[in-house]
Length: 295
Image (cartoon, rainbow, N blue to C red; front, top):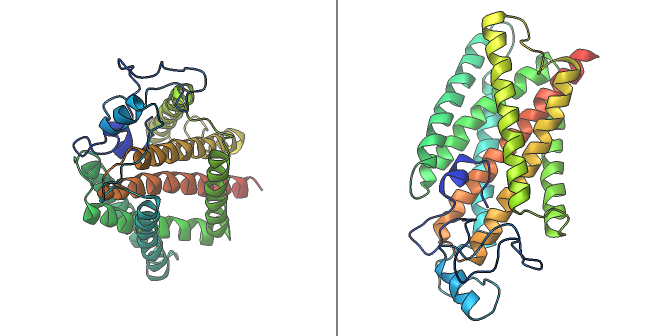
């Protein structure tokens, strides 16, 4: 099962350390795809995975090997906390040191956009590397934090007072809600779920690109997908998609631990979760801006 995050969707976790990502293709000797009662209905969790193959031969569900140096949930939590902590610190510094008053907003916004572009480049570089590079991931988080700090300050001080804190609370609520629902089994991440989410995401992104092109070349608000009632609708859709991507990320992490992914892959999980949380936060911020402008 693969998530939207470019680092996950390209290859899953490391292929050369005993864990090959989430291949949904059937494999001889494995359980039938979508078999009733299978904990991984909709995909074959044993494909290209020596640990899962060994468990299958013994008639047991996949278990993480006892070998040291394997990723644990503590590793994922620690790396995710470090990555998000870096982002939050730089966001707070950008908020404090890059004012958005009439005299400085141009310079501050320019710095924020520049930081976002560099962060995007670093994210793509990491996505195409075979192994996670902590320096790249933390650099991405730091620069993304600068961008979020500036954008949040602009929205909070010039459009909707208190929007940044509301967006933070909303993001935390979505994360907690999806985690609880996932752990309780209310969300079943299978092949059908993955296909639906990816199709919806593709349609969403294409519509936003078309809207951007119309706004750039036609002026105004483009097709209106980011303003008014349509903007509110698509803002809610964006948040729901982010929640779905969180569920895919949780599945990715859970299976990586069960299959014995190398410990260093915890950085990869942290990177992917950070990307998704940034997506959700930005959608909340955008939605709050639209709601405030309509009042």
